[in-house]
Amino acid sequence: MPDMMKKYNEEIKPALQAKLGYKNVMQTPRLTKIILSTGLKSSVERDAFGEAKKQISLITGQMPVITKAKKNVANFKLRIGMSVGVMVTLRGARMYEFLDRFVHNALPRVRDFRGISPRGFDGSGNYNIGVQDVSIFTEVDPDHLKYPLGLNITMVTTANSNEEARELLKMMEMPFSE
Image (tube, rainbow, N blue to C red; front, side):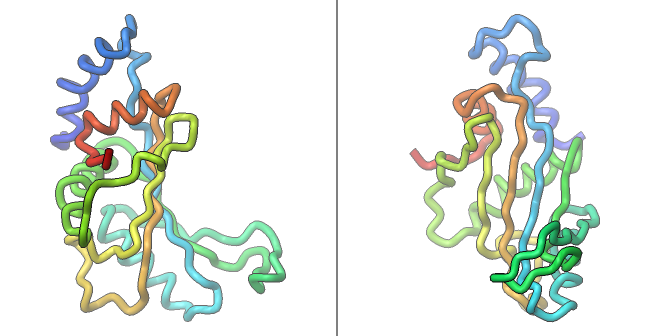
């Protein structure tokens, strides 16, 4: 069992339940899944998608899928079925393991890091953060990166509001800037 998962079950869940005044343990907000995605230009070389899949699988330990366009968009020269990005969904133990590595290893490696923005909440308790360069993860070797790659990380929670989700993520040691 990952350390972050153990910490959530033993410390965070009871503390959140008491702080938010819930009578039932199942009402307590929890992290459901973490989605990592990246978009790539369809005009770039085809091996860019293979490279992105390789880097994201190194970061997450799980094989990502290539996402396809669902509509034709003439301005982007995009047709239905063309590859547009790479994504992976993490749940369970892998999710908590990734969150632990992201908070304790990757974020401190960001240059001039002063905390993450508290404005990334979407109104229903989910949090989004963008990472401009995947080389902040220790699993990625910057010398072997052929194409610049950024990530969008979405943390989906069962929280009813942004305040509950912020409290959950704060207790999970997310370094919000105030």
